[in-house]
View: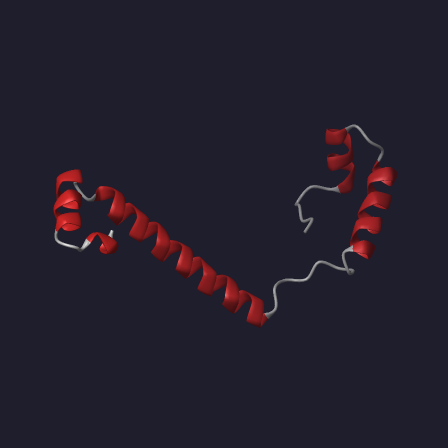
Length: 85
């Protein structure tokens, strides 16, 4: 996805190419990528939110597991509760 608040001319100057060259590249890209760049559809947005929640949960779980004291971890292993970590 290509989206920017800068003009084609500003981006072209930044990359050292001519504005028409950049405009042609952009047109070619958009044709190959299926046309205009639309926002995510409702099902895709819902899926994205779901995956973001899963990632947040996994990060929280990882942080928790890393915070367990090594002595406690050893005690849990001895008591058969290591699978919880």
